[in-house]
Length: 170
Image 1: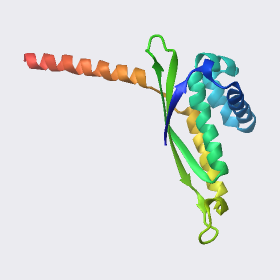
Image 2 (image 1 turned 180 degrees about the horizontal axis):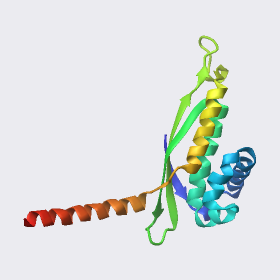
Image 3 (image 1 turned 135 degrees about the vertical axis):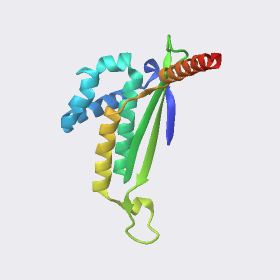
Image 4 (image 1 turned 45 degrees about the vertical axis):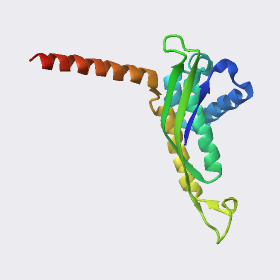
């Protein structure tokens, strides 16, 4: 699944933001590695992250939430890539477009012929292990700033063209 949407803090539902913040607090209590991974990047107070890097807050917390929903229904989820780019322009962003690449793989076992998915029993150990792996990956992975990458490609293209111009002189 490729999920893309607009991230603008001033237009978001505060109840939803509160749920994501609570999710971060639960992780701090439940996982030893979380403090060093998340707080090492963003500090102890989540407020500045919400105010200055709201797009990163969503890129770190939403896949985890989706992964928890998947885990509860027997799906192993992965989120190998996260992207963002500023809109309307790089120098003065009004909001960000954020994207996730997500995969959901069913890890259930069939408990009988012609049973519905709801009646199937997930292989909970596999799903839980995948969820924890995905959660850590989402927190530790680099998030791709598409605008910076595009600039790097443009700069590379210019350098290649200047090198080719030098070669053509000989």
